[in-house]
Length: 174
Image (cartoon, rainbow, N blue to C red; front, top):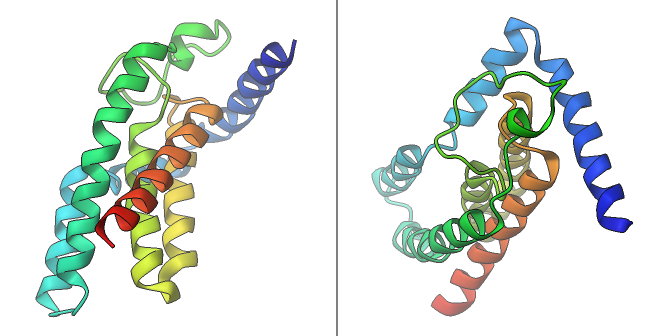
């Protein structure tokens, strides 16, 4: 009963959020935000820190690498064990996503997990940037829903996974 209600909430929330993404501006904003969570841009972040010779650049980069070394295998195991179908495959009223996802399954959101790895790590090393970093990570998660490739619970699971991997990496390193 509880799982059924949770699933209903997830589907209803998805439909409510996705219905707001029909404008060109919403699509462009969601697409851009989603792209900011692509892996290669994280390397650019580390490069910028080194460029400005920030004293924490080496440690932060090490923590990020360790966090992603934890996150990626967990993400793949979860995704391939849970095998949750994407919104377009489940919801008949939905139709299609605005983009083609890179893989078949939905839970957890890898983009969101990666964004929360970065945001949590940045929040640890640069507390003044914590709110901005977390707003960005939440926006990435929201963009994945608005693009039609994830349910809200996929995003929540990705956020949890990314945060826990970042905190674990920090604890392991220190």
